Length: 225
Ligand code: CA
Image (cartoon, rainbow, N blue to C red; front, side):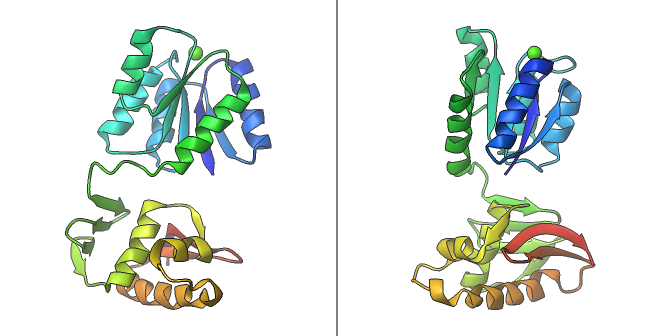
């Protein structure tokens, strides 16, 4: 799990970063608002932790802009200002949670865990990854505008990848999402279906979208072929 921390107070940034690393997260720290926004928009993070008072751009403004772009990445705001209006503004802007400084580190960890467990709210039925589009309501898939026919199983499999882009998914995790029967002993069924899916979504394109993660499973990631 990769987290983005945008925090301009060096002491707080160091303390939070260290704790998150020890908890097993990958952490990028940015100390300025505009740079924080650019990182958050890269869509490389599983969750974003934002200080509110930042040079360049406030944490509330950053949330607003990433939500305006349709991004659902979970966001936790850190605020020193214990005022109702701040919290309301933050939540209205699209933040999922907030913590008032100073906070106990285990509480931050607990909130991150809770957010990462929560499935993202789908206000929009169209999932996109690179030039691939999956419409969950119409059951349609397109790549670069070209329609792709998938079987229901292949569609379900692709949906799992598109809901977890950039994440290495184990065969067991994939099976849990796609197959309702107990097929845990036959995980190679995943390899067969990933093969079908790759043939349909990647054929004719010079970038592949589903990568093998050796010893783990698969990950949705762009790879120049
Ligand atoms: Ca600050």
